[in-house]
Structures are given as structure tokens and as C-alpha cells.
Image (cartoon, rainbow, N blue to C red; front, side, top):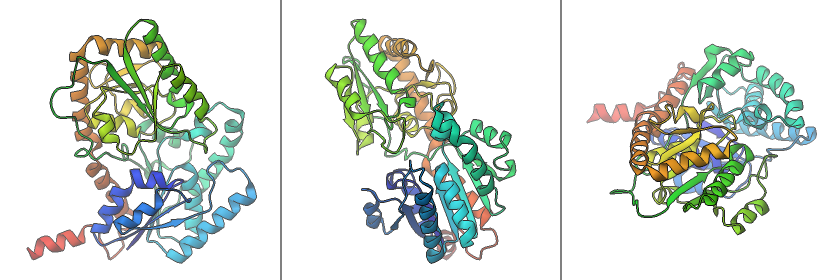
Length: 394
């Protein structure tokens, strides 16, 4: 049995889907990763997983280039003949589904974590592309041998109301999961005798609330309060709404934030901070940074918008909700946490409990495999048969 995972970056596959691939591999399946070239792809070999590259540009609108990408996708699928193709992000889902239909791939899972730039931006280009993308999605994603995996009920309602995919084909899996043993609170009590340390960890897109975060830092400083504002993440050249590196460097020169860039060891960083802030007004799936922060027992400050509210469900109980696009609201909540370290502790404990009960990657893998079983019901091979055979032999 062969599975292929297709995403628009090798970084995404390595950081978000490696655990699922390894689980399948342990059960006797072959797993192939497919993405455009990148620096993370070679790491798959260390885990015994093949990685193939595809000539694909995320931001391309050149028809000839896009047709070439689709032809390459068809060729790869025809050569590899996977039993199931799992596509991630809107563009990969559309291209993967079309290519799978041409190549007669038996089963397709399309995972869309958030609706992305085309559906969330008010820019002229996004509005112009929206009806075209909707037509492509309606034609590509509704096959009888496919399922659409979404991360929050708001996106599910949008897909159904827009008649993009039949409701019967939608499966809800909240987030890509987090390793709650690797992402865990620091031992002992957090220090209360040092400045509050706040982190925003995300792709540097304006819609993630980066400007509001920096403005909140300026407001806090204007009040004479001493807090540390950290920013982890890199610009995203493939997204028209990426923050420019020169802009971030200017904020650093002004003393507003400490920019860490891309961070390899996120658990170590998270154990050194107190608050995970994500003042996003983006149409998120379920933000990875929030569930990683929750698993590490951090107090979470985000917005009450789709995706974010899947993690912080109750203001004042498992996190705090700032008003979207409102730096003053964010600043006031951070000042409140600085003044009330007991609230900081309680929010962190409840966030950790939710991560264990809702976002542990073992739960996500289990739910993902349920979707695979549904589509592969007629196959002679069954997921988990190796473990079952071993149990019987023992």
C-alpha cells in the first residue's frame, strides 16, 4: 500500500506531517513526500521516506507554468501509482485532485487548513481570483472517491454554503496535532521576578496581526512597563501579504521586538516564555503556534475568529480574546497578565489540558487514518494489520 503526501513546501510536510508518515511506515505502508524543492526535503531520507520534487511556484499566475506543473503532477502520479493521495493547501488540493482523476488514483484526501489569501484578502487580485478558484474547487474536490478534511466548523459551513463540496464528503479534524511529550511545560514554577516574555510565532504575514503586535509593544513601552516582545518566523516570499524583512529590522532598531527568525527548537523557545500571542485576523485553520503554546502551558492571547477560537474557546478560562486589528486591546490584555501572575498560571494550565485532550497528534493521526480506512474500505490491506498480527502472535 502506497501513500503520497503533496504540499506546497517541504517545510510543511516535514514539520506538520512527518509523524503521520512515520506511523503509516510502521504499519508496513510506503509513504512518498512530494513538494517543490526546498531545504527540508533531504531530511526525509533520515527517516527512510522518499521525497520527490515538483516544479511548482506557490504565487504563480502564469497559465503556461501552471499547465506545466499539472502535467508534471500527472506524470509523477502515473509513475508512482499511489493507492491514496493526500493533498494539503487549496492550490495543492485542486491540482492534486485534477491530476489524480487523470491518473486514476483510487482515493484522494484534500486537507485545507484555512481558506488562505484568495478567500480572506480584500485586495483586487484576491477578489479577481476568487470566482476562478471556486469553479476549480467545485470541479476538482467533489469526487466520489475523495474526502475534504477541514480544521474548523466555520470553514466547513463556508464550503457547504458555497456548494464547493457536498457536506457528506467533509470530515472535521481539528489541527495537524502536536507532540505533547516534546512540547511540554518547563519543570517547576515559572519565574515571576523577571519581565513578562511574550512570543508571536508565525509566518510573517500582516494578517497574522504582526503590526498589531508591534504596536502593542510600543503602547506597553509608552506606559513605562518592562516586557519582552519576541517575534519568531520568517517572511513568506510566496505570499503577497508577507511582511518585508527590512520592516522587521526597523522594528528591531526601534527596540520594539526581538526578531529570532526561523527557530529550529521551538519546544526550548516556548519553555523560556510566558505568553503566546497571535492577534490574527486571517482565516486560520487551527494555528500550529497556538496548540504548541498550549501544550507548553503558556497563556494564550488571540482573537475570537475562525480557527483561533478552536484553541481559545472561553475568554478568561483557557486564554484571552483580543479584539481583531486592535493593538490597544492586545496591550491591555498583556498588561493584565503581567499584573496577575496567578491568572497567567491558570490560563497556562487549562491550555495544557486542552492540548492533551483535543490536539495531541496521536488523536489527529487516529482520525486521519479513519478517513483513509473509509476510502480504502475495499482494499485487501488494512491499516494496523501489522500491530494486530503481532498482538495475536504474542
